Image (cartoon, rainbow, N blue to C red):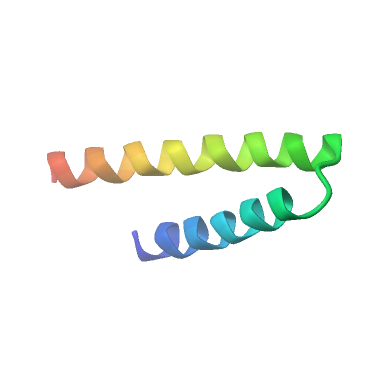
Length: 52
């Protein structure tokens, strides 16, 4: 769980950097991928907290 949280923090930093920097198509695709991963991890953590 700790690894997932650290990963999410790193992803948020990358996303902010992408928004502040030049929004190239590649960065936008990466942003979508990272956002999906963060949302999945968020739902997964909520599920694990609720179920276990």
